[in-house]
Structures are given as C-alpha cells and as structure tokens.
Length: 226
Image (cartoon, rainbow, N blue to C red; front, side):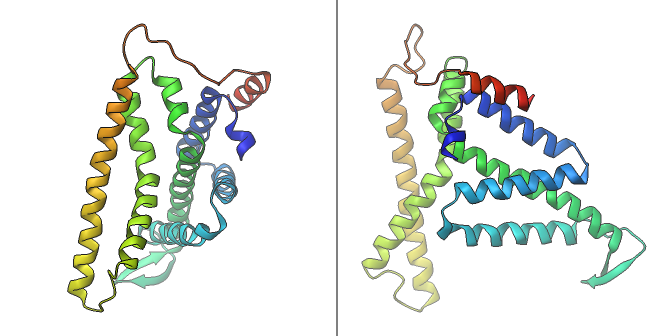
C-alpha cells in the first residue's frame, strides 16, 4: 500500500475517480463484483488487523439492509418482512445495488487512506486555496475525531467515569466526553487556520515546495486508469 501511495497525487486522484465512476455508472455484475472485491482487498491492506472486525460487521449489515429493504416487486416470494413479501427478483436487484453501494463506500475509505491532506492541497491549493483547505480539513476530520475520542474516553475511564451502572450517569459521562470533543474540534480548526494564515497560504506570489515528481511509472498508471 505504501508503494501505491507514493505515486503522483494527480495520478492517484485519476485512478480513484476512474474506479468510482465505473463502479457507480456501470451496471455489469462482473465489474461490480470485481470492484467490491478490489475494495475489500485494498481495505484489508490499509486497515490494521485489530480494527477490521468492526468495519466488516458494519459493511455486512449495510449490504443486508440494502439488499432486503430496497424493493418488494417481483413474482417469487422468499419470505415476509413486516407483512411485506421479499421476492427473489427484488432481492437479486437489491443485492446488485448493495454491491455498488458498499463497493463505493469502501473505495472512498481507501481514498481517504491514500489521498492525504498534503496531496489534496498540492493538487488544488493553487487554483482554489480556500476551498482546498476546507475540504482537506473535512477529509481528515473524521479519522482525527475518532482517534481523539478514543483518547478522551480512555482518560475519562481512568479518572473513574463510566464506573456507575446508572443510565443517567452513563449519559452524563457520554455528554461530558462529547462536549470535550466539540471544544477540541473548534480549537483544532482555529489553530489550523491561524497556522496556514501565518505561513501566507493563499497569498498571490507565494512560492511552494513539493516533493511530488511525475515519473514514468506515474504515466503508466495514468494510461492504465484512462
């Protein structure tokens, strides 16, 4: 995965866009299943082994939910759900939609793991500096929020929070952690904007340094993606 992440950011963006566009607009089941299988293998490479179980359970639940509840049209009933028949034709059609939805979600997760904020700013920082900064902060916000939430929760548990079995106390503890996370999020956004402003980000005539270089292998991957 590290070798793939070392490709030029423009080539990586082209690759992910090609995969996502084909996955969303091509209805061939072989291509859809290939996209889903590739996304699963990519996520296994990107995700630590200890965190894969929760992610797999979420996407399996999402797949079943979309496959079963998408439609009830058809002539071959399989079973009844809340009085509504789930037919074979509707289940097959819902499964095809679920393959597309879960595949796109997994590829977006792979995109967030490979396309870091510095790569995004390198691509769009000169053309749309303000929007590029906002989007890069939004893309990295969720993983940073999850890591910080885990740290705050562990610190609060070490101080005796969540020790009571009362639902009211658990709710108050969760609210306390949530308020701490809101304060941290606002402070982080202010610090980032102040830091970029101090560096002269977005000013006309500002020079920039980058380690990204377009190589021959980047051209090969771009040609294959196209």
